Length: 264
Ligand code: SF4
Image 1 (cartoon, rainbow, N blue to C red):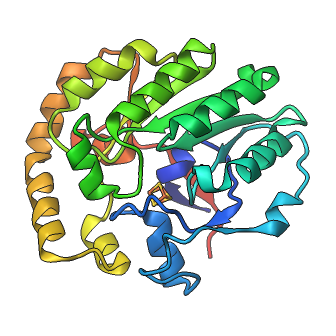
Image 2: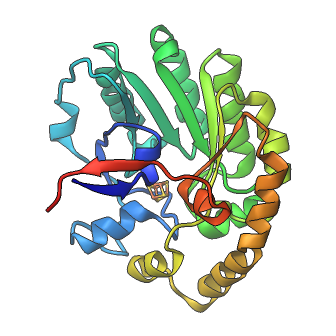
């Protein structure tokens, strides 16, 4: 047997499900985009076109132990909201637990909350919010909702009695205290903090390694030095709402869970 670090979506869920290829949010650092380009399923120029996977919409699910994460390689956008709703309900119907991860559009989250109250206790929302500054968000995640809309979606789900959490991964600036302060009143579960993973390689593969982006990325990496991360960790290490992604555990020397795999 060998052992692999538990990383990325494995830190959150056992099963990954998606029903779309491509994403109009078109985040510069997107890992799903870089994988799709490497596998020649998409190009840097057509990643932002969303194609429904009809075979996935027809899939039926059975009850499994462990959490499903949906989506992991696209987002839930107004373009295909009905398809995403139907796919999500297919996963939930047999009694599965689902972690719904999104850079949330208020229109999408309010519809999910309004139409699926019978599954309220089987859904945990995790909204990705990397900055409170909508200009910073627009730079890195050009097609995604701004901060105010994401906060409104978080409040909506919270007020409707759903379980809520926030992923601040990647952290897009240094104002993480402000972000935690603004979102924490509406979080029932956890706030995850993490750095941008493999930024140089991802920007290069995604065709987003222009001078302005590389310079902003280098500035971000130098702000989020190991010393800065250590201070962030010291401020929040006793806060039970805050959880640390692998990139931060590594920087502060916390134990990183390992997954057993077969030797190859
Ligand atoms: S929202 Fe997620 S899947 Fe969509 S482009 Fe951004 S990182 Fe990629």
